[in-house]
Length: 318
Image (cartoon, rainbow, N blue to C red; front, side, top):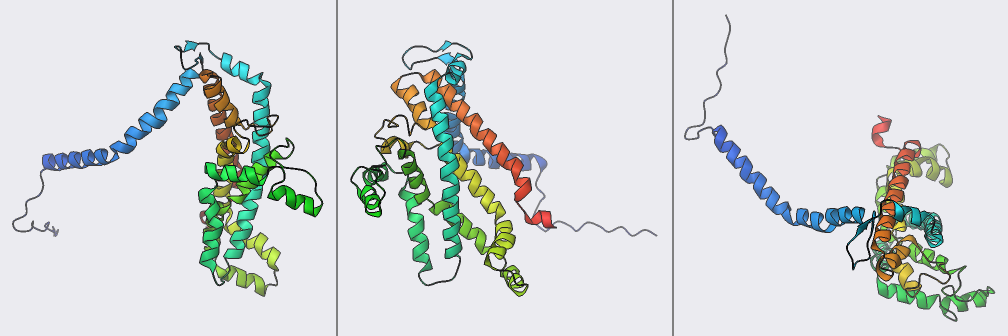
């Protein structure tokens, strides 16, 4: 004998929704969602996707903003690789990225380790260290930075008092780039906050067990802290590296719009701006922009490939 369990009857007064009505209701909900998304979609198409497609076309043309673009194929890229100033901009940008990014991350991690300890006034110190990240990219800070590193300014006088007679950094081709490095290192607040959030997630039990085993501070940092915050470290390395490739405002302002002296601060985006808006070679500038995009994409791909060797996730330990 087979027992068949009847389905429960519908609640009195409530009828099941017809398939056609359910489909109409789904369409209305989708339409409402697209209407709410329409400002973002319009902004993406008009301000991001559209200009990107146009610049890709201009990269293969001779375009000076005043006449119609003329198709020239890969001539802009060939001319670019044989341009000494383009090569100089690549060299300056690479030097800035290699020096500035590690120093900024080291300082951010060091301060985050100090702020991770419980102490009085911790909220004030966090806000104080984070503040430069909010104002560091402004034009006014660029002017102040230029004044600080000019001849006979505070930095110059301090060096002279300590016995280092190098003069103002802004006017010296050998030192002006390091003033930009100092400016980006000064803005360590954003990665510091991210490091601090990662340090707060490290279980205290791991440190207590390590102390019982006799591990010292350096050993605990190397064997516990770094592996546990390696995903956060990877995120900061990736983000700050991309930001370093895009430097423009500080280099343009500190060098008094000349990207110098002697092209010492001729970062890639500064030369791109000169070619596009000062020399009216928009086709050449578009080709430079796409080369920068490819370079950043390549560096990003290398970082993602390398993370398998030094980034540890919780899923990997299970």
